[in-house]
Structures are given as C-alpha cells and as structure tokens.
Image (cartoon, rainbow, N blue to C red; front, side):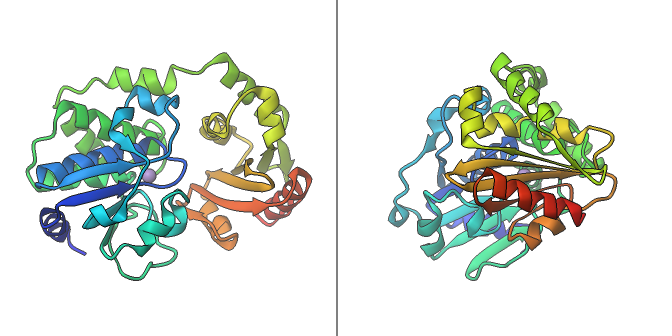
Length: 317
Ligand SMILES: [Mn+2]
C-alpha cells in the first residue's frame, strides 16, 4: 500500500479507534499518540484504547487521560493498529472486537509472519520504530507537528532504538530526529522519565535477574521469573522488561531470554540478541515473532517446566 492511500483512508473516516500491541512500550505509545494527531489533522476523530495501568513510567510522558478502555466497535468506521500487524499481538481485552471490524488499517514496522485477511497494510520493517513511520507520514502530508506530539514521537524512536544504540538506528532515524528537535522538544524530559527514574524496588528486580542467570554453551542466557518471585520482589513484569537491554549488554551473551509469568503457568519470553544472532527466527519457531534482535514468544507450564524448555531452546542456538 502507498503512503498516500493512508491519507485517503483516514480522511474519509469519521471516527478512528487506535490500538497498539499488548504490554505497550514507548514506541507503541508514541505511535498511538502520533496516529491520533495524524487522524485529527486529517479531519477524523480519534480515540486511543489501552488497558495499561496508570502508574507506568510511560504516563510521565503520555497523557493517561487520553486513553480509553471501553471499546464499542459500532461507533467507529475505522480501526487503526500501530506497532503490531497480527491480531494475536493485541491486548486480549480488545482482540475479538478488532478482528470483527470490517475496516482495519495497520501501520507497523515488524516483519509480517502471517497476513491477516481483510486488513490494509502499511508495513515497513526497515523503519526502527512505528513512531518514525508516523513521523514520516506527518512530514509527507506537510502537517505541522506540535511540540507535544514531537516529544511523543521522539520518545517512541528513543525507546525502540534503545537511545540510538540498536542496529536498527540509521541515517534516516537521525535525519527525522533532527527535524523533531527543530520543533523545540524537551529531550531531557523524555530521558529523565525513561532512564533516570529507576526505583530501588526495580534495582532489586535487576539484582534478582543477575542472581538467576542460567548460561548455556557460554553464549546464551535464560532467566525465569515466576509470579511468586515477583510477589517476593513486590514488583510487576513491567519492572522485569526494563532490564532486557541491560542483560543484552553483557559481553559474553549473544542471546538473552527472560520468561515472566503473565497468567498462572503462562509465561511470556522476551528475547534480545547481538553479534548477528537473529532471535526472531527462534521466536517464530515457538509461535511468536518480532525483530531480528528483539523478539518474543509464549511458553506454558510451571517455572521448572518453562526453565527446561528454555534450556533446550538455548542449546539449539
Ligand atoms: Mn515498535
């Protein structure tokens, strides 16, 4: 699909419902808030739907009051999914209703492992962030970006590039970030909220992760965090996710996998890799997906069983 078609689709819509993936991150929120602005500038009303809890660090940047949880699909003539391209990646609270909708547009930067029928796709995996795709569209349509939205988009790009560290960072990333800087955005505000707000409780989670590393063949690491562990640490899985990039920075590891219990005996495994190891291939084999160096999948079973499965997966890498 061409970028000008997106403009046509949104301009001819009255009410747009915007969704991102489950367990939203900076890029997901950056893209959702940026997409809301894009829709409004093209004359459509837009609503963001998410079940994210209010006390996440994300809401030091994004306005919590702008998100809604009660989705009535009959009120919307367009559903816009950003930063995800499969229904399976959506929050289960909305998945069925979104899937039933007749008019679904997807704007994303993840590689497509399956193509949902009936949806219109604008998927470009060469982009480091969904927020960068939205930034590009805004510039292409010559829409003047507000300082606030510029900060949202910058936050999304910073999030998915790990502060311009990951290999997805390219010349285009910096070109567009320079344009966003011209809007007078406050980048320190974003960095303070994101990287200078670690609590002592979160440091205990970090300590737990370092104390519970299982190293396979001297190059792959897996860690399993059960709900019981989280309770003991008085923490949530979001606190675990904060340290994925830290673990990936350890020299000896090519691959890092951290499993955390989302529901009883249902684990989400977040993966990171470097040195040319492509973790999305591993994730795909397990029914998951993602990017080459950052991907995820699900495993079921108790802590011991999940640890055994992860050990086997790591041995094959
Ligand atoms: Mn993303």
